[in-house]
Image 1 (tube, rainbow, N blue to C red):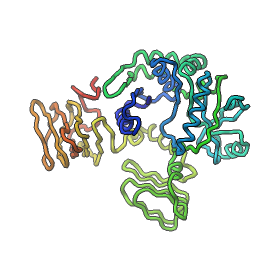
Image 2: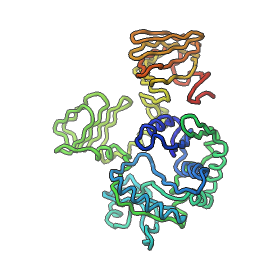
Image 3: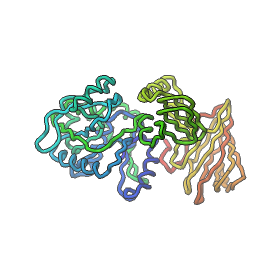
Image 4: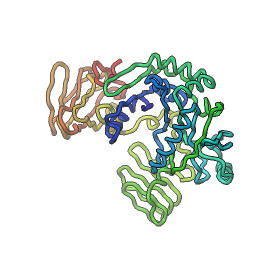
Length: 423
């Protein structure tokens, strides 16, 4: 079961289908129109699990964690399942290896005779000085955000400690739209979804419930929550530098360079993160790596599109990349996967010119349909109903030039769409 934003539903489904051992397993996707934090996400997942019958045990795993020792993780998951089967809410605590200020901490209580510990208190992300004290004390663990419990146990806990979350989740779940095309999907209206309180599971339940059991996990763990954490997964050179992509280092130490295309040169620097992507360039001290979220918050507050839109955008049918944009025009590279097609659509404010670079395009424009091959082009005038399809076995790659008085992504009217995006 995957809980994610609806914009990533097709991408996560593709990745599951391509993963050995998972490709033919039943898949439930709970697709959120917006993020409302972990308590609503877990509440909806518990309702979905309860619908399957048998009061299953749920293992809640955030998607951005790296756990190299899978055998140790499986052993911990089995132990958590055993403890959760009795009705307890089980948390995974990670043994700290450094005074990390980017994680929440949990202070351990007494050991249970049949496994795990009680929880004395939860601590929000501390400063470095306080984190150093916790590391020295030896009875604090990192809060991993991973949980294990029966569906009935977490539903009962939510009803007791966060009744407003559970009431809203029940109402939203009843109104959810089920779609069985390509995997069981549950979608929700944005208007209904905003009724869900924006609150974490820790704050809503875990800090108040009495049936909490903490399992001290015995495996290496990283949440890859910063570029510093990314750099720590790479092999460093003799000067402590880590690099991805084309680079040149002169007299530099303990620096991470990451490029998605261009050459990065670093001269006489130390303890830096330099990340170059098509969207933006980040330059930061490794010691301030957790503050990238402050940059994102300021971009969101100013309405900058870099906070929400990548230069390359994933779509159910493939991808598009904005190569250049100016006043009254935009140039894109479009890749359509084999046997996929865009919606039947029209635009009020722009015309489109398509030049095929590779593959074969099947183009519908008005009442006409034609094949367009590599090194050929076609034109879609303003207001024309049109559709682009890839009937072949290889990717269709084309350049699209949009020209008009408005070239925003919201100038689109869909009439038919195989991915359910009409309406």
